[in-house]
Amino acid sequence: MSYETITVTQPQEHTVLVTLNRPEVANAMNTQMGLDLLAAFDGFCAAPNRQRCIVVTGAGGKAFCAGGDLKQRNGMTDEQWQDQHLIFERMVRAIVACPVPVIAAVNGAAYAGGMEIALCCDFIYAAENARFALTEVTLGIMPGAGGTQNLPRAVGSRRAKEILLTGRPFSVQQAFDWGMVNRICAPDALLQEVLETAAVIAGNAPISTRQIKQSVNMGLNTDLQTGMMFEIEAYNRMVPTDDRREGIAAFNEKRKPVYRGR
Image 1 (cartoon, rainbow, N blue to C red):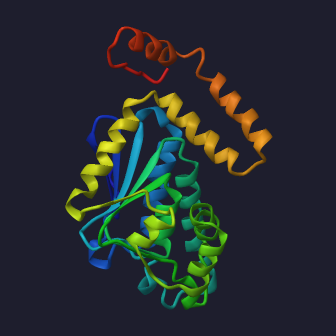
Image 2 (cartoon, one colour):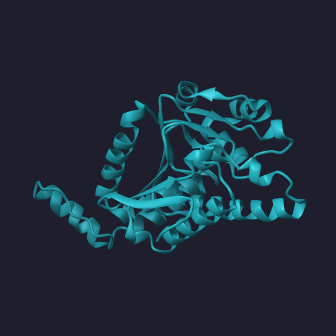
């Protein structure tokens, strides 16, 4: 499918690359970008077998996403603002609900809603020039796309409160040290390194990767005993699969397994 504000391509087998494509405004998120991302991720949720890993990045070398397009928002009525934000809320829920592993490739500034999009992904690789901030508090609002929920889960509640309550930017090194970013990459190597990791994930059994993602996410929101019970239910889903039999056969035959997602 083609979109106005994003591009969706397949750079390698089983991997989809979603690029936020408004570089002239630092990939700021307007209403159409919200609609485009919602449509794309709704499609991924509806047909998870069509891809095994998804990468999200920004066009150009300066910004991943600068957050909401404040020029478009200037002069909006309260009703127009809330109508637009409802689109953003639905978009975020679609990203979080995506059963397929999603990696953020943060290639520059990720501010406000842009940082929230990155936090909605399963993990983050970032370029050396990346910077992060949740600046909403400085504008008389607050994060409303998962920032107050995903950030504490990534860096802990006390660090998250400092970031959220001050609105101060922080460096990629700080993000790495705090556990929010998994890997820091040279800017010209970022996408290559992300795609290499995506290829490793895509080479594993897709039912397994989806069940692992779901099990981790569910376990974080419940007590340990319930999480362990959910894990066993997720595990048992894979016992009768062709992929489980292929994995064991390939190990014993000393060859690379060929998984088919069934």
